[in-house]
Amino acid sequence: GAGVSQSPSNKVTEKGKDVELRCDPISGHTALYWYRQSLGQGLEFLIYFQGNSAPDKSGLPSDRFSAERTGGSVSTLTIQRTQQEDSAVYLCASSLETSVPASYEQYFGPGTRLTVT
Amino acid sequence: AQKITQTQPGMFVQEKEAVTLDCTYDTSDPSYGLFWYKQPSSGEMIFLIYQGSYDQQNATEGRYSLNFQKARKSANLVISASQLGDSAMYFCAMSPFRGTGRRALTFGSGTRLQVQP
Image 1 (cartoon, each protein chain N blue to C red):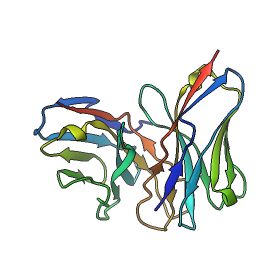
Image 2: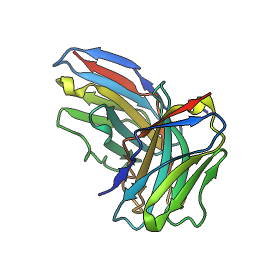
Image 3: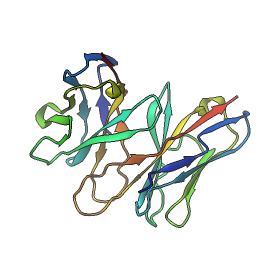
């Protein structure tokens, strides 16, 4: 079946502009994560969605970052008033998390490379 | 809090030989999962192998095996019979299992493996 897809694959934006990054998880996966990968900080968790529960936003670096997940499927990460330090690869992952002990591997999309000039 | 340490920034191995990539971790969670991901130059994170903290046997997936030593808090990845296509960045990661709630991955800094012909 189809894996996790993300769009756009590359985004160049001017400082101060808003950007939207999209993630389409694997069908049936209830959990969705956003991570950021940058040279200085490595891989960082940003936000987590699980079913209809309130999202866990504890990893968002500032209030300029927000995300939503519509209909338990597609998610959009929005960065307002972008700064140069927001330049990174933004990775989305989905997982089939159940109450039954099982592997909880996350499957990643190809990422969106964001460059803020 | 969780922490993953990968002390080998880079490794070289001859084609067809085995290689071990080191990973140590620290956590206060009684139940957790350990993961290895491969990131080739294309950028996508590829799930390789998973080990649950209560699993009695070390995980194996084809040429990959995870040498799990719980008392030492280590989860080394062993790749047997290295292939040129194994050249990539390898990340060790872990997540807590707390029943419900996020299972965000905490990543190490990665090891860049280069397989030489």
